[in-house]
Each structure stands twice: as C-alpha cells, then as structure tokens.
Length: 217
Picture 1: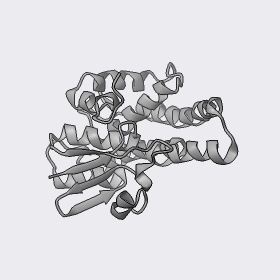
Picture 2: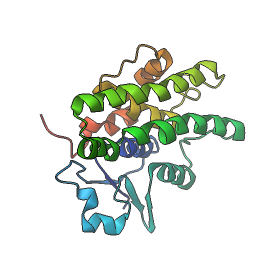
Picture 3: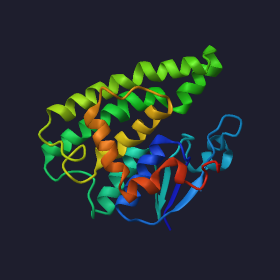
Picture 4: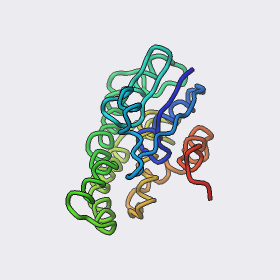
C-alpha cells in the first residue's frame, strides 16, 4: 500500500496529493504534525524514516522517497498514465523552468523551517513574517506570470489544456499567498489557472482543508 507522510498545510505535500489524485492512485495518508511544540517530523520514529526530518515522505512498496520533486518525477515515470510532463524535450524544459521558480527560489524562503528560525533566532513577530511573505513571494510570481504571458505553451493551465507539473507547484503557492494576504491583482493568468484548477476534483480533494489532519471547525 502506498503511504504519504505529510502535513495538511505543507505546500510540498500538497503538490504530491494533487499528483496522486490526477493519476488516480490510492494511498494511505499519514499525518505528521509540524506545529512548533509538537514537531513530529523531528521524532526519533520519523527521523528513522527520513533523516532530513521533512515532509512529504512517500512509500510505494519497496520504494521510499523524500523531497517532493523526486516523488513527483518518480510518480510520472512509474505511473505514466495522465502524464505530468510533456513529451518533447524543449517543452519539458519549459515546464521545469516554471517549476523551479517556485521549487528553488520561492518556496525555500517561505517554508516553516525558515519562518520559525526568523521567529526563534531573530525575534521576528508575525507582522514581520507577513512582511517577509509580501517581500519574497512576488519575486517568484512576477517571473512566473511573465513566462506564462510570453509562452506559446500556456493554455487553460500552465502548459496546454490539461493540468500538469507546473500547476502542482503553482496552486499550493497561491494558497499560501491568499493565506498571507499577498496581493494577486498583478497576476491575471495565474489567477485564471487557479480558477481552472479549483473546479477539478483532483485539486479539490488535495486541498489542505480536506485532509484528515486539518482542524475541524
């Protein structure tokens, strides 16, 4: 049985949930509470699985992988139906360019480990964290929107008219932007893609609020 260790509000786990839903792959969700003071990702049991102490962590039979980019590439190669990447090499490179704006330059600055370090080590309060989001998230969004605007490959989604790898990275980041009230008026194509993804079942079931470990109102 496949298992996905994650946290409902983890952007990286969110990406993997979307991919599993798009590929119609069943899995067991194993919650790892990342909240400071709980920090189950640093428990001895979890560290024995993933020495980095991060989510997501994915198990598929004898295969066990951390890091969402590796998990997503694995899923696309192991389960080629409903592909996440284009066939042509130049088009794959274009999609990976979009992906890496978020994966390499945007998300790492905004993840929980960084924001907690800002709070604990440098005395940054929540207003400061919000300002940090407002400073760095638009850096990636501006480039992402510009590439979508320029590219002949942009369709209903980031690439063409079927959801794929770039959308898996974009939608969780837009979720975070809305959570931290980062203005989105300057990104009309991204907003349109967000709406297109939002009506699809695969994206709905992957939403943080729909996870077993999400707080119940």
